[in-house]
Image (cartoon, rainbow, N blue to C red; front, side):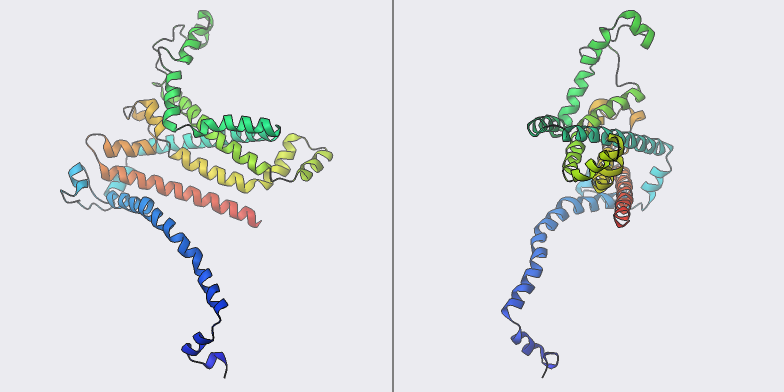
Amino acid sequence: MSLLTKSPGEAAARETPARRRRRRVDHLPYLLLLPCLAIIAVLLLWPLGQVVWMSFHKLDSVRQLRGDREWPWVGLANYAQILGDPFFRTVLRNTVLFALANVALTMILGTLVGLLLNRLGKKMVTFVASCVMLAWATPALTGTIVWKWIFDDTSGLVTWLFNKLPDGLSTALFGRSDWTGYGWFNDPLLFFAILTLVVVWHSFPFIAVSVLAGLKSVPTELQEAARVDGAGPWKVFWKVTFPMLRPVFGILVVLSTIWDFKVFTQQFVLAGGTQDRTTFMLSIYSYAEAFSPPPKYGLGSAIAVILTVILLVVTALYVRMVLKQEDE
């Protein structure tokens, strides 16, 4: 009689110990993932679910958050109010333009530094890469405070340097000779320029080291063959190196986009709070609506959900593009 015609008890009795061990091993990876999944659920999914839930309610007091009062259900009213507000379109424009500029500058500068590091000797590349990574390892709050001191309107380094310019040259170029007391963060365009400087300074080391790691995996024979054929440095990079590192650049662009869309600490510190609404971006806009008096936690949560959806869409598009390029 074949095994297919035997009862389940007889089939289990005939199962060999090796087969039972193999079946237990097949389930082992899932068991090992359970603690990680539990931590993610507690630290990420639960707060995210709470934010989504709050976005469908009208919350305007701390007592409601504590459960002392009922949460009035308003459905999509918070989203309709936010999306119908002309100021939201201004904030979205600021966020998108700032993210595009910072992603482009961070990727270009990080790639150039990575290419430079790849041409250095082993000891020198270790030293330079360690120095470069100090900027990335510095907490965003600490680095931003340093940059705010540099642009201080009385004793900052930038103010001191501009005051050292000849009066005639300074007046001809900028229309003023005395820079003491000049508010570097008052003009929106200048504020975004300084904010871009701070964010790019903090972000490019990660891109540089990641590109350097990718360059180490590119076969040198291909690059040497391209040089023998008469290709210059730019053509070697664009025709040989870049196609092989396209997945690396795709991941770095996704990460940079997510980070630059969520910039909060640098803007909050440089602006000194949430008073200047002309420089608002989505992250600080969400914070201001939720916690500035009078608090509107429902509206702030709705803005946070919109920002999350935008990041998910951008990430999905990039991942799809990278996977499509890999298939091709």
